[in-house]
Length: 581
Image (cartoon, rainbow, N blue to C red; front, side, top):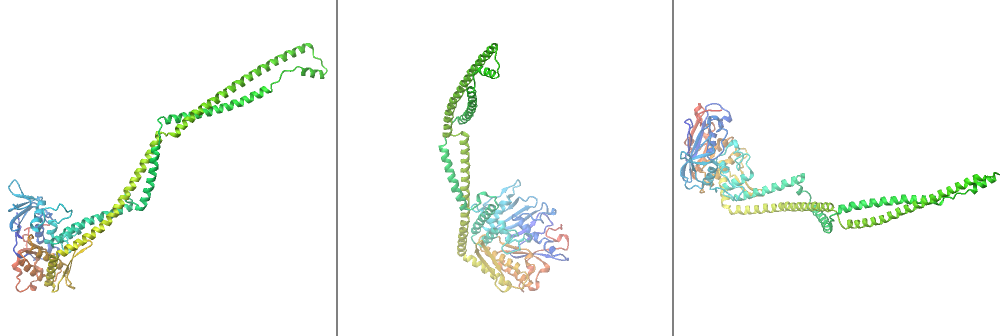
């Protein structure tokens, strides 16, 4: 429950709160725009300051240079104890606390002036405990209720999109936070909203993996299990064959030298064979020459001369005998030479043939070694290929495993989503009393505004909790805002019966925009009655030219509920007592 709001500047107009209905009224004396009517005098700024003092981020208004180094103070009652909370616009990281904090789960520290101070983070955690009965933290849950998210439903800000829907308080509010905060504030089991979001995260990851696999980014997720299984069988067979080859592989330490020697011997054998061929050809020529060699014969000369009738003188005969003897000597010498050459050539051929046989035997021995053994580099190459194929096989196995996990993940996700939906329905049925009470209160609130009951539906769907509201009032203006009003009031009515509660509900004047004057009057009167009956404060801001004076009940005195009037008659008439751009 709020007691007062002030600042360390004399120009600031202190706001003193009371029980029941509290109206901060802005009186218009000058013609102004619709935007000015909402923000010109500081009505909304009051709500922003309350947010600031309850751990919220500083707003654009409070960031203005004219408000630099201002200290705002909120006096309030928490769990029956009064506290004074101060926070400076320049030094926002901590708050100064006055009051008994001995039973708090987090204790303030002392500054050099003896003030009790607390970091803004710890202050928010303490407020969650004191206002909403939250735990200091929820280590077992990735998604859990937070004070700031829940508190924003009790002091909606239009600039944050707080009046867009009954179950949201922020324009970009996440679905999990909407479900979690609303279920917590209605007394439902919020842990299901947390678990739902974990499953949604899993689904998002699976969908992302699928998309990336289809685009080729993830190799391990590409292909079908059937195709990969077939490839795995082929690789396993190839690996087994290579393993057997490696097992039977014999490496000779001098394989390369033996291979080189075998090649050298082969070359030498070829050279010997070629040389023998040449010598054999030469041998045949020499044999032919020897066979054709003729003896010298002078009788032929004498016969020729006799046929010619010429007698050869004795002297010439003697010379012919000498020539014959000389020729015979030459023939004998030539035959001796040819026989000698034939013997030498035959010897060379015979020697080479013997050498060829010896070399062939050596080469055969070497080739046998090469056939039975392998070179080390060949073994290394085979081993590297085997290692590569084993790696490919492991890669295939990993792909199959990942795909199976992916498919199992999708199947398990469907099962888990179905199970959590069933459990959440059971939990909702177990909280039937709380659910029916919320529905009843919303229906009653809407009926008091429109003479017909509205509809609040609390359902469990495949995506989580759903909180639907409807007021069947065709033709009426501002029905959407009145849905928010009835929903917020219902939530405050519920919380006021619990041990922990903020003790107040704040609505900016925007909630009454475009609403029929009769419904505005009924809403203010309903807020007055229910806040007194349930011991909480209903605080709202209003523009004087929108007050439906003629539509109030006779016993409702609007003026009695005004806690502060702001005016545009001069620069000091606003909340801050000064005007700024």
